[in-house]
Amino acid sequence: MVLKVLFALVLPFLLVLLFTRVSYNHYVGTALTAALLIASYTRGYADYTFIMVIDAMSLVAGFFYARKMKRELVKKN
View (cartoon, rainbow, N blue to C red):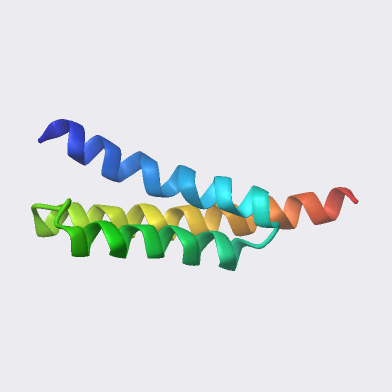
């Protein structure tokens, strides 16, 4: 149970960053991560509602960090 909570805190955040770096667009990174989360929910991998809430919070945090990361990258160039 504790492991699921830790994964829910970290993995969506990192996936948003990864997909943003690959696609150069934080909206695409967020959409791809959200699609993966929705697919895992429909397959039954999320047992508890609070895991889904933690996933969503991590997804939002990843979006804002990716947006900040992209702005700083544009400033440097």
